[in-house]
Image 1 (tube, helix red, strand yellow):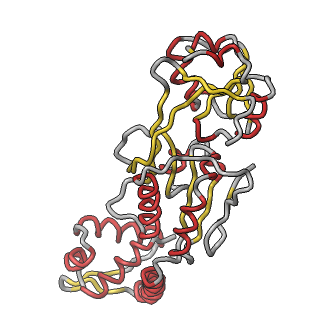
Image 2: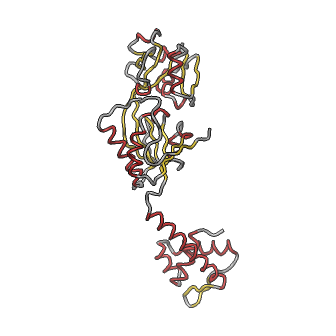
Image 3: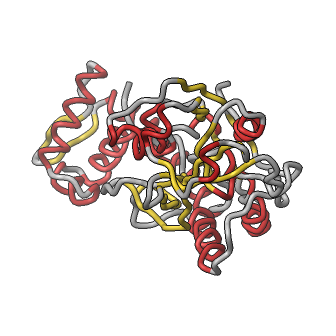
Length: 318
């Protein structure tokens, strides 16, 4: 039941002969080491050191444990050396605030994986609806998501802006309007992503500030299904322009509120002084892509998700 810190303590005290000298070697206070030593002895139920003329000498039990401690510390040091010698043998876990992002992401993934063929890219689909929570919990390394609140635990790299629009059938009464208000939406059949309402901008930034709720709401899991249901006259939905197909037959977009609902997308990581090189390079490629002023467009439905020398993996609980 001992921990690595106990093994380091036992080896340091055995090598130096005192807690004071061991504290300097381990960069801890003597009182902290004394507490750790007492904790180790209590866990084992044996005495590990005895004091002789201001020196701490190993007992018989202590000598046996020291052999184990040196073996454990040696194996840990070897494992750390292997990781440092092969920094690209790593894993990059990615998720986004929207499945449709994977439509424009593959070209960037292809460039990145060509330079980091030994890094496994894992797309964590189950974190799509709450990427920031997964990021803070250590389940992700990178999240691509809009409108991230500023906080000390997160680092953001701005990427692009989009505008949320109301998508309606071309012959709908709202299609001729310059903009729509929250009151206009109340009587509509609102189609949304299958997510909690507090995660949907049409509620948090349009309806709820006006104190309104639509009379009928239907959650739909896929962007393609949302679009086709609107095209068929079943209801209306809120999407940015880049999520819509190139063929807009039967569809019309209308601005939400007079000023519009704009969103700022960012590449988000946990705050850290230094990120692994593959992660830093991935963010750099994203930034370069949008600094050139390239528009976010939606490619053909047949556009592949896998790119690069090594196929990415996806994980999902569903």
